[in-house]
Length: 121
Image (tube, rainbow, N blue to C red):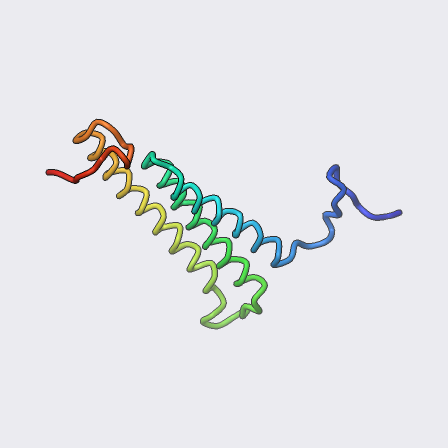
């Protein structure tokens, strides 16, 4: 038996396929969706949105890698560019959301979304 086997009983010489990436992205998406729907805390909802965006980034990268991407030309870096764009979008979303959360905390004294019934000035 000449195969390389790590401590988990897996062969590291066998490459990971598209299905593994899609499974990880689906798990991240479902966890993010559950976090958005079940949390009453605004920070928990923000973390759920970040998980959903990360699932989208994993899907872009996986389909770029396994979808027959071009090695040259205009379509060579479509997947990574979408990934970088989504990372920038997530950073901007986090900055704006945290500013809104600070404003909510200073005005209402809490960041629980259920206890804030009406947005006031």
